[in-house]
Length: 255
Image 1 (spheres, rainbow, N blue to C red):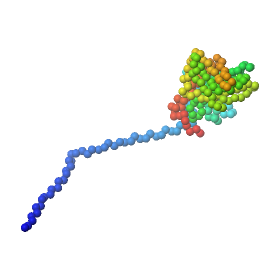
Image 2: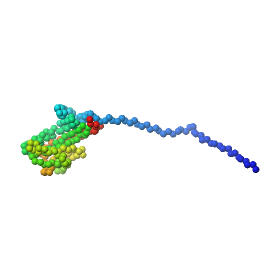
Image 3: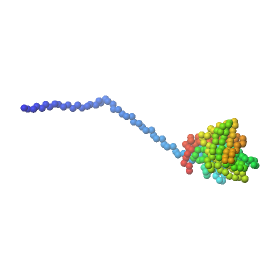
Image 4: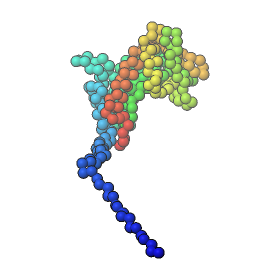
């Protein structure tokens, strides 16, 4: 018996593409160009921004490299609403700005009437190059006996609004012509500005220096000078730091 093989036709079906179809594309994202880095903030930039905050007059440099000048903040025509006595130490690269009334009163405390004790809170703006400016307070006592001062407190209308205790060894002590000197220097923190502004605006104001041997209360004249000048000093400090920050500082590569 013969076997019969039936050959079945095999059809290959080719897939046909539609010539009219549009291929999908992914949008290409073009990266924004990277801005060039800002130039480094230099000591020259710092000095420019610092000097931009006030008008200088009567500038004079002595043989030791100390420049004294008058700095006027908020000059309106010929009127200067905030005047400071400036001193720049070219070697230490630092400026000190002191209200004139404070500077004068410091002299009267240093040389009080014979036998009298005198105390005061000296204050100033200190601006080291390539750093922020700061309001610096210096409680000072000139007396016949030691107080061993270690604390200053400010009372406004019956409430103590600000007080500061000295770190160990922070108070400097010395003798001068048979009398004693006690002096302490510290930075007023930005968070405490409002406390001393409240003190300055109070009707009743008292400043007390305390120590191991008791305490002393400052004279009305010393309190009034401080209350008047602390507002101007804080304002000058803020004006300087705002200008330094706006310019790109205050930190820079100190040379």
